[in-house]
Image (cartoon, rainbow, N blue to C red; front, top):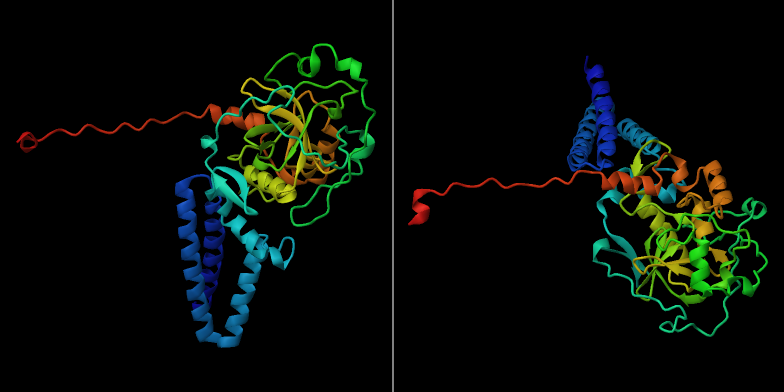
Length: 369
C-alpha cells in the first residue's frame, strides 16, 4: 500500500508540473496564475515523494530516482532542444517568459529594450529628392534584391545564434532609366503599386529592380519583423508581412509562443547596429516609407521570409520561392500553426472592448454633515 502511495505521489507531481507549465503559456492571466500555482504544488509534491523514497531506500537510490524524474521532465518539455547550452532559454519559453513582455523592440548600447508601441510619433515626410537625409559617401557592397526560382533553392536562413548569412540573391538586369522618367520616380511607383498610396499588396512587373530608386543608408531600430526605424522615419519592408508584436503562434508541440516578438528579436539579433541600405519606393498615406532594404549584399525581406519569420503579401510573388522553401523546411512560424498577420489583425480588431462601469455609491446621512 505504501508503495502505491509513493507511485501515486510521483505521478501526481509529474501531472501538476506539466499542467502548470502549460498554464503559464496561456494568454489568460487567470490560467497563467493557476499554472504557476500548479508548478509550485507539483514541486512540493515531488519533494515529499523524494523524502518518502529516501526514507525507504536511502540517499543514493533516492538521488538517482529524483535525478531521473527531473531529467525526464526536462526531456519531455524540450529543454534539451539545440543542446545542453539551450536548457535555460527553453525552460524560459516553457514557463511563458516571452508572454510577459509588451511593446516594441529597440536597441541601445547593444541590448534590446522594450518600449511602448503606442508612444511612437508619426513618421515625418521624406522629400522625393531626400534633401533632409545625408547619404554617406562610402561605397557599400552591391545590393541584389530580385528573386528567382533558381536562387531560391540556394538560400539558407540566417540563424540568430550563428554568424552564417544567407547567400546573396542573384543580380537582375537594371531597367532602362527612360522607362521611369514619365511622372518621376514616385509617379512610377504609384503605377507600380496599382495607383493606391496605401497598398503594398499588388504584384510587380518582371523587370522590377529596386536599385532604380533613391537609396538611404544608416543604422536602424527594429520596430517589428517588417518595420524598421531610421532617423525617425518608419520603413515598412516591401512585399512581406511579419507577425505583429502581440501575435502568438503554436509551435511543433502545439504550445503557444510569442512569435511576433521572437521574429523581431531574430531580425535585431542579425543586423545588430550595422549599417543597412534601403531603396525607397514610396510613402503611404501616413507618411510611412515603403522600401526594400539590404544588410550588405543580403536582402532583408528575403532573409525574413526564408527564415520563416515573415510571409509574402497576397498578389506579390517576389518572395514566394523563399516562402515555399521555409514552409517545406518548417522554419520559423512554419514549425507549427499560425494566423497570417493580416488575419491576426482582423481578428484582433473584432474583439469586443469591455467597458468597466463602477457602481454608484449611495451617500449616507453623515456624508452631508
